Image (cartoon, rainbow, N blue to C red; front, side, top):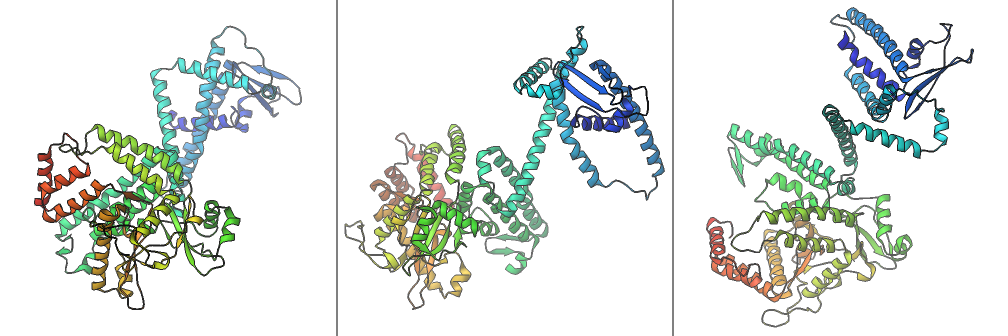
Length: 634
């Protein structure tokens, strides 16, 4: 019976702690009756100070005051509360005996859990009260000096909060000095429990917000990296069954898929109906959605991984492709607010220059979103790229964390082979510079203008004079016949606001739309040659190239007059210049890969400056030859 009384007693005491260090009013009236008339109610006022605990009971009719010391108060409350609990326990036992039938009504689990959560604040308050008051109560009990009478609580509050805070601090320090191992363990367990509950509630609230807007937690993750760490850990745990179970299912059924080979499956349709395919597809969706929720840098990682078909299953690649240009964007009122905040001159400046703004974005990526509009007083349609909010602040905090990871990688000598210059801190520093330049649209405007001038492309895709010369020193012709890039209105652009020519196209990886638009196999070969030709020209002649050529930044412009389609380049936020040795070394590396010549590859590495002066060239050459022999480079 005693064990059954523990929980009701604790709950009642915790409940009374919240209600002013006194049990509920009916119990109090049963517990303390100091008047000569047993049936008369006695209103009670409670006042407490740090160095004593006193209760004043006053009878309204008799106007008598009785002061109880802390020892007397404790003894009376304990005895009366125990009696009350015994009576409650006995009544509960009788009720349970009466309702022992198999079909008796039981308390629902929802009500039990609700009652438990309602007691958590009371338990926390009781702990704080214990820390603040217990040392002084113990000191008052053990002291032989009579406890002084103090003013009511209202009078104490009028003196200000400073003395009260000082007393609480002194009491806390006294309590901490007299800690035992048992108390320390109890405090640590309570602290860990509270921390765990807070994180669980925060994760649940974040999940609800992300169901509405997947980008809602980017700022919070930057402010609290531990929250992102927990989200990343949860994502990895969630992915485990989607990584392991498809292989287990295929091993049991004896049906596997290796590239385009469907071993055991009659055709592709049968594989798409299989459980393994459905789990892989769901796993890719979970992974892509998790990267999207973690922030812009993780979206960049997803964009890179979406181009590595040799690392992931096609279901995962298809899921990560949405990170290229289908990141959730702001629309409607939120889009207008973002626009007015980014536009030079604000709301009035925008409406003086533009009209017919479409608040539904054409596309959205990790850093910004693109909307259609029209120049006021003109028929020219433009595309306006607007940057997301708080990007620089997010980059500051995320990149500081990644720098620490790079230093750890350098200390472990990861990737060092025969003197190859593989400093992760240096690589990170270069990447950091590129990433910061990417969120400054003025740099992107300069890069886009230089790219267009190097290929001789003007407004409307018309040919203009080309600025670059070939290896033979002759001026190169315009590439406007097979290449296109939007014209940039630099005078209308700013750090977070980029205005460019509107150039519609079909995403280079969208086979269905390309087929519907009449793009044939021959056209695809022509476009592939145009893309490779453009990069050879960027590396070897222009010495300036776009470093972010994922399918979201490449399009195909289709004409209705029978002309061959053109390759379209978008987004020059990431671009890089090359020195003469770097440019020449890249050309030599390409030639050595075509010839599978390891020695020539090492010579090209030396010219590019990626080898240390003390590099073991024989070891580097052996590694290159191994890659050629195994087919990893071909």
